[in-house]
Image (tube, rainbow, N blue to C red):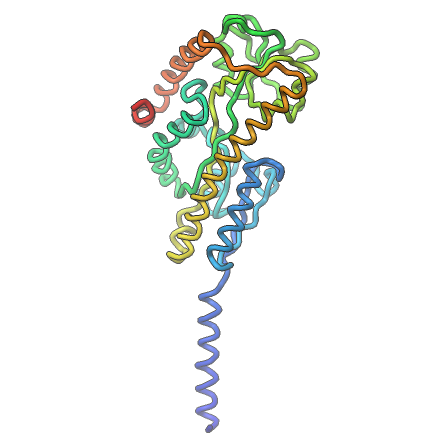
Length: 326
């Protein structure tokens, strides 16, 4: 081979190597999530990332950053919308003040229990996707938290027994719930719950059995009512520009893994609730479902709060509730 032909052959080979390398270049994404490694949502996210890597043949690598270590929860929506990160998980209700549609699953007693929570999600989903698209985002999947129940020091014979109680709340909507129950809303952080109950700062609260077990509620309160008042959801979203920049095969790997994560996540949530309810009972708490009269009373409050939410959410809220109640 002449020197000229050798040079041409080498150049062609080099170009082929570069082209192959570019085709196989790995996409690396950092993914913030607000929750700890032990939380079932984070466990699910990590498995999702593993399945994306497998489904894409290693072309997509998602590094999960748990516990708000990369980006704090209040900043996650902006970060993924602007492309600071390409993918993220956050609690939809965290941004309900920015977009009322995100708060649909935070309205107490609008959709009590997992079956109703799933039905509400299906009603909310098309509008939720549209709102996220307006922020340059694609919804990959969404998973509910365990249901929120009522804790009280004394057994409840009726919801009127909550009138006059000092009621621990954690959001504007739970504070409004306390007001409608005739209770005094008091914001208390989870680590402060034992002391707050011990000192009489609060004597009732609404939160999940999962939070009850993590805070050892049996040490300061004796009654838990499985009202399943609402199931707030987390959402996993991807920046649309990053999503559209992927190959069709890699987009499919991402959405296939997301579909599996959504189903798995709801199953994990149900299991977490059941295990937590059992742990409360095993530690001496009275865990019971509210009776029919209590359910009716809670539902009336839910109707009022839904009406108030609808005023904020407007036509989008009307469409969600109409589809949910079909």
